[in-house]
Amino acid sequence: MSIRLKSSYSNIESWFRGNLHTHTTESDGSCPPEVVIADYESRGYDFLCISDHDILVDPNQYQQDTSMTLIPAVEVTAHGPHIQQVNANDRVAPNPDRQVVVREIVADQSICILNHPNWGAQYNHFPHDLMESLDGYHGIEIYNGVIQRLHGAALASDRWDRLLSDGHRLWGYGNDDSHQPGDVEIAWNVVQAEDCTVDQIDAGLRNGNFYASTGVTISSIRASGTTVYVKTKDAQRIRFVSKLGVVQSVVDEAEASYTLPEDSTQALSLSYIRAECYGSGGSVAWTQPIFIEEKA
Image (cartoon, rainbow, N blue to C red):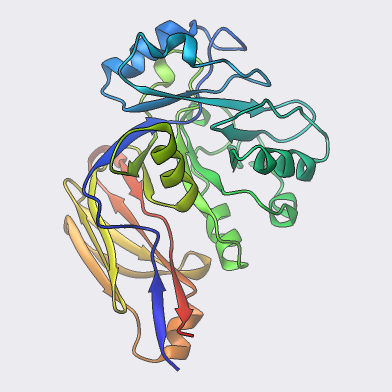
C-alpha cells in the first residue's frame, strides 16, 4: 500500500490578506460602512466583507472609493447559531433548521462558514453535535477576534480537530468579527491567488488556498512526496498537528518540514497534517490541513 499527501496549496507566489466578518451601523456595529472600509484599507488589507446581521449590504456602492476588493456577505443570525454567507448573491433568510440555512447558502453558490463555535459562558455557541450533523458547509472560524472581549474562547482549533478527525474535510478561517474600531486587525485570512479579484479570492477561500493568522506571515506551504514544508517570515516555532490534535513534531525555527512515517498504516492513521506557526507576542498562523490518502 502506498500513500500520498493531498494539498490544497499551489505554486502561486502572491498572497492577499482580508477579513470576512465585519459589522457596521447597518446592524450592531458602531461605525458606518465607509468608515469601516477606510479603516481596513489604511491597515493594508486587500479584501473585505461587510457582513451585517441578516442584512446584505451592497458593496458596489462603496467599491469606487477603495482600492480593496469588497465581497458581499451576511451573518445569518436569527433563530440559531450564527453562520457566515460569503460572496453572497442573495440574502439567505434565517431558519431555525440550520441545515436549511447551510443548504440555501450553498445553493446561492456562497461560501458557508460556522461562526465563533466557542463563544459564550459555556463555550458552546455552536453545539458540537450540531456541527457534526450539518452537511455541506466549507469550514469554521478557528479564531474570532471579538470573542477576546466576550465570554468564551476566541480560539476553536479544538473543534476543528474534532471535526477533521471524524472525517469532515473543512477549512479553518480567522476573522475579526469587528463591531468597533478596537476589534480591527486581530485575525485575518491570507489567500494564495494570482489576482485579488472576487472570483479568485472566492476560489482560494472555497478550496483551501489560504491560511489564517493573528500576526505570523507564511511565505510558502507545500507538500512533496510524503513531506510537508512550511516557510514563514517571522515564526519562532512550528508545530505539525495530526488527527485529534496530536502534535507530531515541534521545530523552533522560521521554517520546518515533517515527513510521514514510513509505515503506510501508521501514516494513514494520522489522517491529516496541519501546521501551527507561533511568533512573537502570542501571534499564530494556521495552515489548512493536508490530507493523507491511500494512492488509487
